[in-house]
Length: 318
Ligand code: MEV
Image 1: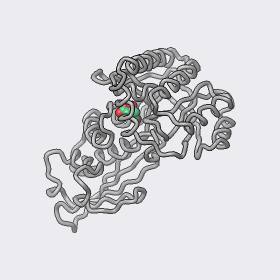
Image 2: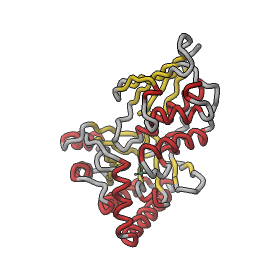
Image 3: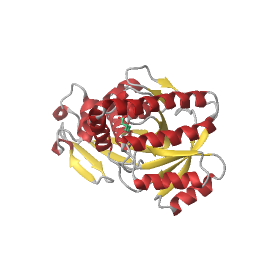
């Protein structure tokens, strides 16, 4: 029997993280060259229900049924299995590898779940639509992150730039004029669950004040969408800077992230902000001229990794 392999990209949130949980729009793009992969290898000698997970980077090698009920890898297999009980599944080994750094704001959990659900569904002879896949990944995201908005599973499953808003049909974003961003790793692990909870606590204590912050983030997202669609990506720099200031008000930034953001700006970036849940993870910077020098400056100032990536509307099948 053949092996079944699937992969899924990481993601970058350009605008609107956190406020998106409260119904505001956000803009995210897939990181097509940074991917998680899952391979399901049928075990024809094994007994029904014998499924082994092999994820060397975690590191984790374990029978699936030994993982706790709420373990995300077990939950992802359950999502793929649907009505079938885990103990009735054909024997196999599932190998998982990922280039998407964990707890970094780049959507590693959604990427792993997406690759796993897609490959395991294929192993079971089912072909999921992108929407079905996204819905299943969302269920796993809820276990991991508490109250996610759904943006990560959507951008990762569809692998296209999106303008996302809860309870609104997904808008795939066309990008008539591609642009470049730098993605720089602070080297400090973020914690999306904690960050989302921290924002919720603040909002519950002072709903009026934080509602205004969310509203302003929503407005600047709509403005960013206009600039992207109008082919004026250079205008996004100032919007990124303002989004960062609002994320600082939400309490999800850190001195380390701010020092990298400052470094990007002083080296010539058009704007910069944290990306994703925050409390660590990555910063992004909009660049035009001198991108290599800005990358160098970021690593000189403590980024453990900084690289340039294009933001474009690219069909993953092309
Ligand atoms: C995490 O990638 C983005 C957050 O807005 C949480 C969410 O939308 O689920 C922080």
